[in-house]
Image (cartoon, rainbow over the protein chains, first blue to last red):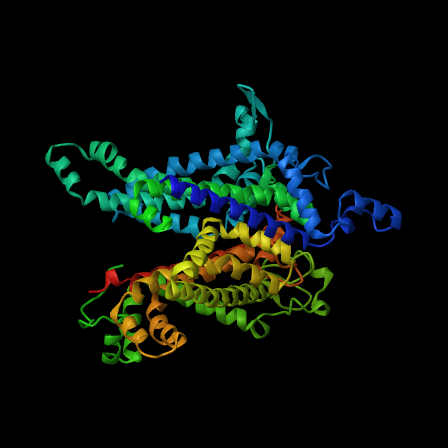
Length: 324
Length: 315
């Protein structure tokens, strides 16, 4: 196990380095940020000075080495648009994204699992079919389009919810969050529902599949023979047995929820990191792009690594095959 | 979705073992496939919708009342006409007009054509790339296999939207760039599926037998292995076309995809989104409805194809 751990850790480090080079070269290939940043009438001296200031006159490999050296000191560069350190910028936007993801995950689980349980419990009922049809919609209809419909309905036509922004930010236990104010909740609820739909569809399908399978098993039959009510069987026996795959997929999907936040945040002008990355792509803010992408790579490599290690812990065959 | 098995002989229609192949002609296997497929009314309706949409979109120059690319045919006086209004062209704008006086119905037909084209070509290329990677990995095994599949796995753990977003940002705007980004973002699904199916097949005797002959590796791969890994790939391909169309729409909506001068459904919706706080909702609703119908219909057909091709549903 220890050898396997070392091997996978080394692989993860190699992947992060390889990806950081790809990201750096790739981002470098996008346009010339100087053209966007300074007004076209600027003199040649000002141009040259700015180019030198951002280190853009250096060869690419040297820029990359400078970047690596700075990263080692915790400096990811300075945003060309906001003119503040990228690390500060990203961390100032992160809470908004995290609270959005948090609420949407709550919604996905709070609705998805009960709905999936019911759909698996009475698979032939009309309600179950409606639930499954909704889950197909949640899967296949593009997020941004549903978000737009939500805005049209609740913000424009009914006028009961704000169409965008984060609202008042309150403070709970020293954490600044819009979940502390009523206004904040009214802002977060629509984007959170929008972001939760895909995950909710997934939760419904997983729970339903597990439920349908579990209801046929012997332990359910025995529990029935014992005289337990269906409610007791589902909540104390079935749920516990089907929770493992649900939790696994749930963990895996956390990363993708962060990714989908890019779309939802753009639709609802939610000031999180997702909106930040879209803005920085449109404004060619290279340091922000590189930082965001490297963070995402690290996040996904960590998720992968965790999953692999957990599986290796559970299944010795993986360890033997991979470690050979 | 009950399937009618009475019409099927003991040798099931889509059986993938080569021994079954000579017993049934290709036509009869197709007929059996269709008999299974039409058991789901939703899938049949979806298929009809897809065919209808394909006809109006690829026939857009002939069926749409206006050429939305032709700037000369646009009249600023026609801007923001409500659905059902008769414009200066003398015909009814059933879905209204946009800010440039473009007939929305025509724009949607042309946009649908762009979306289909991008979805289909991205998917075909991704299928090709995925098959190459998956078969190579499964056939050669060893280091090549573990290296290729590790890259594929890493990519699969990342959401396609993020990958496509980054790639489009790097490559720039345009049809070719978007297709390339979608191919890179999606080939991994095909590679994974090909590899999975091919790993199962390669352990079977007929591949052993073929490999023991002096046939070149290429021939064994393409003539013996490939036909038998196709069914699961067809399923993935249907779903991936829908997802490619949705991805392209999302990218265009985010402003990194296609510009409005090259209307796809996404850029039309994106343009309509600017007017979301006015009562000009037809600008974003109608292209969105077409997008939704297209994507959901393709997914429903894909679901049914999966159901029919699933060996567990055939006995």
